[in-house]
Image 1 (cartoon, helix red, strand yellow):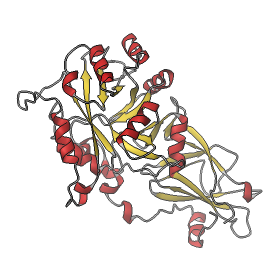
Image 2: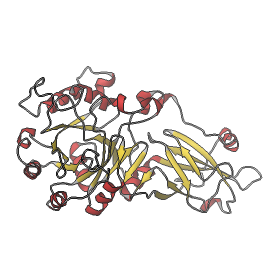
Image 3: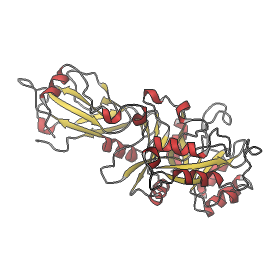
Length: 389
């Protein structure tokens, strides 16, 4: 709408950013939460992490800690994905039933009737396993939404993938650029993976894993129609791996789901309706990234300042990430450069100059912290949803 209070105009003229109420998002416990607004078409942007580890493979914490972290981070769901072949703690923590980690995590996630605080946070836990081959191919591959991890323990990678498909799993290729298996850090398609993709045994690929991202993995996702994923691949503590004190969040995936159910999450994963969240960046197909950005960013066009043709425009960011924007249309600003940042859960006002017809004013921006192809950012035009008010 076109209603901006005088204090906002004054602050804009001084080149200041106006932030929304700070109390709702003060402190690490709020800024770490990966909670995005619903999309304009009614779908939900649900944050999930489909690659985690505990002491039941090579992680450093009990499954309960993984659950507590996921709740603190505002995740809708997390997957338990212990290594199948790599079990360095098996002598200390013997577990003939490979579903045990999942069972413990599920029990820890259950919300009891008298729960309060963090314990009352809902969290869905997904059963999964990581096929773990030392060399490439096959490398590391996650199967989630499995029914029985025990049935995946034995056999070569192809046998394991076929068993995962039999169980109705969603399967994705982990960190194909990992230095331990790709010395140059460049993701490359192999005949094994290409054949598995052709057979429908692999449906996704990590484009971001922990502190890393890969243009080459993204290119492969686009070429082979693979679902793009961001995961933490967490082994230690989230609080150790991410600078939460300064606004960082874990690497995760936004699943654009029709409803808040695991069935809808799985359907969206299979359809490729995802956006990876990595270091305040959004990575995905153009239509998916645009849907998330449009659900997060709003513009409010004001009336020209007195005796001028300069128009204040307020950007409001309802997401947990900062948006770095660059003007991409004919518009220019009186009080800002061509690149500006709208911080998470905040508003920012710019003064747009030389506006011949305010009724036709819109702003075309390039979101520099989005990737819709390798080294390519999303460009979109933002329009005031309630012009003339």
